Amino acid sequence: MQFMELLKLLSNESSIEILASPGFVESFKKEENRRLDKIYDYIINHFREEIPLEKVADLAGMNTSSFCRYFKKTTNKTFSHYLNEVRVGFACRLLMEHKHNISETCYACGFNNISNFNRQFKNIAKMSPSEYARLHRNI
Image (tube, helix red, strand yellow):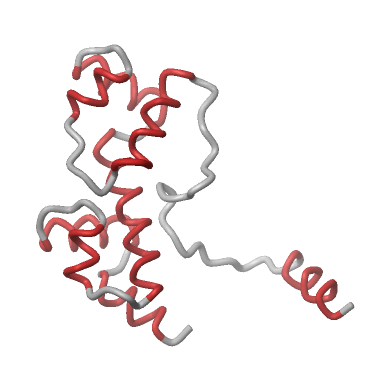
């Protein structure tokens, strides 16, 4: 009974805090568009690696400029911004687990240098990786 009361209490809560970036959700909702399904799957399975734009454009059967326009029009995000959201979302997960320091997290998420990681993290998460780790250390 107490568990049911807890669920009721949670369902009535109006103030929520999202813990990961919108880009990283393991069971994310895919667009109805079949062309993007391959791209989403590829990104989720390879975001830790370097992902050349030419590779994803090829998966979509387009040249790079056409793919960039198509992706932006369909998702309202650039491909690089979407990829960074996925990477930062995974970084949030790693930082919450407290198993990696910020430098290790940076490279584990597919970023090539710390300064770009910090800039992208702050842009997407609205705080630095160290602030994020500190905030979630007490939880």
